[in-house]
Image (cartoon, rainbow, N blue to C red; front, side, top):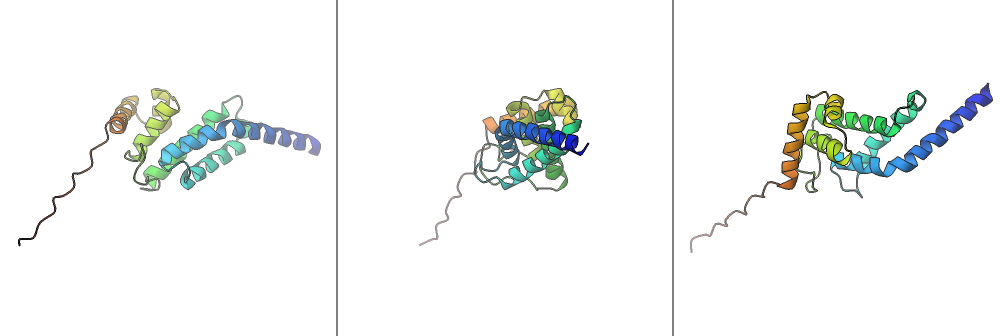
Length: 162
C-alpha cells in the first residue's frame, strides 16, 4: 500500500515537472505582463506565478482531464485580480513599459484576451463581469496602448525682469 502511494506520488511529481518545464516560460511572461514589471526584475510576477503553480500542484490529482495550463492561468488571473482590486495598488506598475499606463483591470483583460487568447465570454465569466464590459475595457485598453496619452509640454521658464 505504502509503495503504491510512493509510486503514484513520484508519477505525479514527474508529470507536474514536465508541465512546468513546458509552461513556465509563457506563464512567467503572462505574470510579468500583468504586473507590468520589467522582464529581468519581476519579483511580484514571480511571487504571483509561484502561488498559482503551488495551487496547481496541490490540486494536480483532481484535475480529471482538465488542462493544467488553463487552471494555472485562471488561478494566476484571479489572484492578480484580488490583489490588484482588493488591496488597492498592490500591483501598481513602475512608470514606463507598454502596459504601464493601464489600470490593473485593463492589463488583466488585455493580457487574457490578446496575449493568452482567452475568449471574451470566458474572460467575462472568470472575472464575474458582463461580456459587454469586458469588450469595452479591452477596447479602451487597446486604444491607450496604441495611442498613449501625450506627455505634458514642458513649462515655460519664467524670466526675471532685468
